[in-house]
Amino acid sequence: MKLGKVLLLTAAVLGAVGSLSVTDVQAKTGYQRTKNLAVKPKAFYSTSKHGATYQANGSLTNFKFKKNHALTHYRDSTWVATSKTYIKMHGKHRLYYYVHNSDGKAKGWVWNGYLKAGKHNQMRHEASKQVGNYVMAKPGKLYQFGGGYRAKHFNPFNIRFKHGIKLSDKVTYKRTQLWTVYKHGKASKYYYVTSSDNQVKGWVWHGFLKPGEVKEAAKKPAPAVTKPSGGSTHGQGVAGGTTKPVKPTIPVQVPKPIMPSEKPNINSRAWLKDDGKRKRIIVQHGELLEWLDQGNSYDLGIYIERYFRSQPTRLVYVKNIFTKIEDDSPYAHTKRMYAIKTDGTQVLGDWAIGALANGDILEDSRGFSSVNPPEIHTKYPIHDSWKGAYIDGSPTWTQYSSVEDRQVLWMFNLKKQQWEKPQWGRPIN
View 1 (spheres, helix red, strand yellow):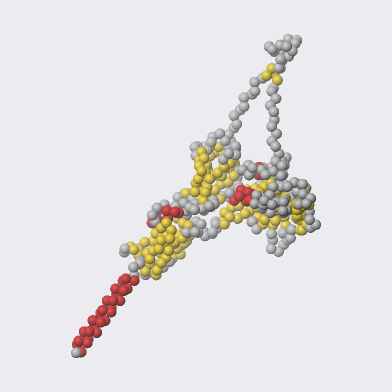
View 2 (view 1 turned 90 degrees about the horizontal axis):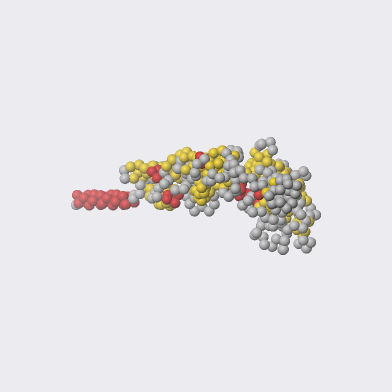
């Protein structure tokens, strides 16, 4: 009896062990991996049409893949790796990086075999502010840069080439910007240029251009016109002398000045130049910011409202303003606005644009600002979104005085149909 009980007990134990082993094997249907190890941020790109990134799912001893992004949708992007792990698959250890793409909207674990080292479709603004004239050195194209996959706006960290236009050897190209463009890990210099006929503007690889200017073809002189003297048609005057050639009169077309109440063609950007003789121009605040956002500068002089923590706000005159990308951090590339003071020092953009120093009028959806007062009876065109301007509501006009550090508010009297100063004017403080 005792021997039978022992045998039964042994069988029960063995059965239980066997059951536990089967259950344990069934539970571990994933892979083993090492702990996450932080790495110095490194840039990669991918040309894979089949790979993917994955979310971490499971433990170190039972890691399972859960797909979250297809790499084929991000072949225009740069991926930044911040940590790594090794996953044991089919007896081999494979290296996986934890990555996020350039705009931070996609992230996950990806096998290193799908990645190639280097930045791709990214731009970096160079400090050079040199402006120069160039001509076509060899055939090439000028491009606009659009955003990457599903992007609505231009993104310097996720660009793509679009709308290629052939260069012409008949025009001069003015370079205003210098950027470094990364394609498949290689860095190239690109110029932002505008053609002398103002027909095209955009980005071009520097090797397609060389310094120089296209000279206009010499115009042939107009044929001499002889005016008969007396009744002769053969150049014989009354006294028998020949007549002197008379140069024909060519009518001179005087361009129509831009009146303050007119909106200029926004594509011409006539407000970027001032010979001191033209009428004042209305400049849309949004258009000025867009111009700066594209990497350009405004160089005609501007008054900014400078803020200080422990001092009153003051108007400061600066020679120009521009924006640039600060990429000190590998996780965030910030666009900051700068101004250049008369002594050549830079002012960081903790300020607001006050007024344009040459007297042009800055306009936004709320009203206008200028160093000059408004013309009393002029209805300046306001932003299209305000249909009731001058009908059921008055725009404002902020007049800045750099001498007195003072701003004066004007409003349009709807009954009198004229601009007037309310009975206050407040210092900037």
